[in-house]
Structures are given as structure tokens and as C-alpha cells.
Amino acid sequence: MTAQDGVFELGDWPLHRGGTLPGARIVWKSHGTLNAARDNVVLYPTSYGAQHPDLEWLIGPDGILDPTRWFIVIPNMFGNGLSTSPSNNPGWPALVTAWDNVRAQRRLLAEVFGVERLHAVYGWSMGAQQAYHWAAAFPEAVARIVVNCGSARTAVHNQVFLRSQMAVLEAAPEYDGRGGFSAQPAAALRAFGRVYAGWALSQDFYRANLHLTALGAPDLETFLRTDWEERFARRAAADLLAQLRTWDAGDIADGGDLPAALAAIQARVLLLPSATDLYFRVADNEAELPHLRHGRLSVIPSIWGHRAGNPGPSPADAAFIKAEVRALLDS
Image 1 (cartoon, rainbow, N blue to C red):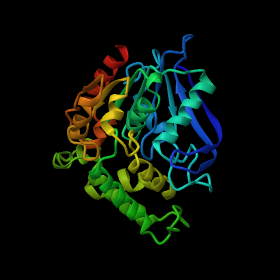
Image 2 (cartoon, rainbow, N blue to C red; image 1 turned 90 degrees about the horizontal axis):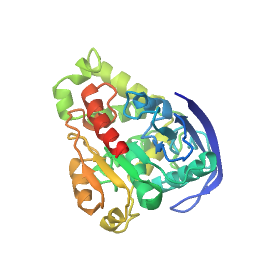
Image 3 (cartoon, rainbow, N blue to C red; image 1 turned 120 degrees about the vertical axis):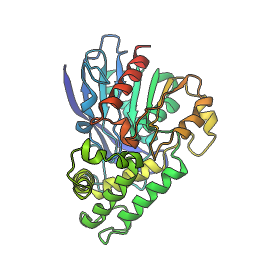
Image 4 (tube, rainbow, N blue to C red; image 1 turned 135 degrees about the horizontal axis):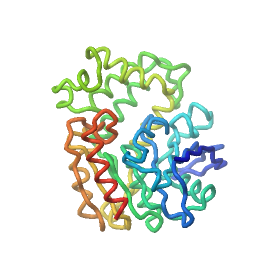
């Protein structure tokens, strides 16, 4: 299995909602071999707070994405701390959207790899939002998308969570009122992680004590500290805030007619919600499905909440996703 990595320089990148991202760059990594026809490409965008090493666990000959068959490209999303982000670019604007990410990714694929059409886009969470935006923005350039725990438009109940997390960060004394921080807001990030823990996993997950038995924590306090506080403390608070704003603004219709935007998608769409996801509810995908030309809904039967879609510690969920994704990619 071959792997490559690189940095793609975009220059000053004009933004969908106005303004410019100065000196924009995408840090990327690929797995597998691009074939001569350049038609075996699976794009795998990153998710909230994640960087490409966090996502590579599912890539392998026996994994969900097989690099012996597919050329898998992971572009790090703007704001994740590797690609252009508030933490590495003082010119960060008020809002960078999924539209800005997918346009930049298309240029990366064309100029670095000579790829104009994708076999598939596979995404979880904010990666799923980018998959949907790819299919909406470039309908003839995408054959298939996997929307794993994601939606075409960020729902109001999802925005309630996101804006509460924005408020946690913005309440920190270190917050400068413009999207940045004078120093890492340690107390705010501790609260941020604890609030996040109540949304990312379901009530049934906690009732079954899986935070102890499956994830190995000796007690709840340790779990909250090691799995949530420490996880988010590794990321710059300004990056976390910027990506919350990107997530909140997710909308393939750009404020317009969502059914029409869904109907214009030409790609085959696999909707893979988790039965117990508190962000991207099954009902959100059920409402989208009738408007898709080539849509299929398959619910992950899991109590792992949103984490069912990124199920490193849950073999049953990983097996379910693998079967569904491989069937789509082979079709």
C-alpha cells in the first residue's frame, strides 16, 4: 500500500460568502495507487476537529476503504489546524463554508492528480456535509457519495448544539471578540469537552455503561477528562470555533430551495445515519430521501450515537458500514 502526502498552495482564495482566505493551502494525504484511467478516486474529507491521521484507521485491505482497489485522497478541511486555519493564518475571515472547501478540493484533485471525476466521496459528520456539497456543486463530477451521519442542511436542533458550544468558547476571558483568543482558554475547553460528551454519544450508550466497558474508562470523571477534555485541548480554540461556524452554515441549497437542490444531484447517494445520532437525525435523512434521484437510506442499528459513524471501538458498527459502503463502491 503506497501513501503520499503534500501541501497544495491555493494562493488568496475567494470565499463563497464574500471576502478572501489569504495564502490558502490544503494539507493532504493519499493511500493507494491512481490507475491509468484516473477513475478509481475516492475522496475522504475530514470531520470536526479531526486531522487526517485521526481518519486513517478505516483504510486498509480489510477496512471500510480498500487502498488496493481505490485511490483514497484525504484533504484536510480548512480550520482543522493543518490546512489553513486561524491557528496558522492571522488573516482568517469571519466564515469559511463547505462550499469553499469543496471548490478548493476540486482544484487540488485537478492540478495535483489530473482528476476531473470522482468514483465517490465518502464522509462522516462534517465530512458527510462536504460529500453532499460536492454532489450539489459539481453534479457531473461525482458518481457516488456516502453521507455517513450527515445532512444536506444543518438542522435547527443541530444549530442549537453548535451555538451553545460557540457560546462556551466566546464566554472565555481569553476570547478577543473577533474569533481569536489571547491564550488557550483552558477552563472553557474543559466545559466544551464535557458538553460535547453529552451529544456525541446516546443516552442508551451511557445507560449500557459502554463508556466503561467498551472504552475502558475506570469511571465517568476519567472518561470525561481523557476522551473529551484532553481531546479538544489538543486543538486551538480558534480552530474549533471556526469549524463550528462552518458546520452551522452547512446548506447545499445556500438558503434556497432544499428539495430542488437535492433533486439536482446526479450522484448515487447512500444515506447512513445512526439510529441514535443526536446531531444528524434519521428523520433529517428521511426528509431528504424523496427528493434524491438515486438515493438509498440504511440506518446503522447502533446505540453509539453520532460515534456509530466513526466506529473504531465498535466492530459491529464498522462491519455494517463496511458492507454498505463496499456495495455502493462496487456498484
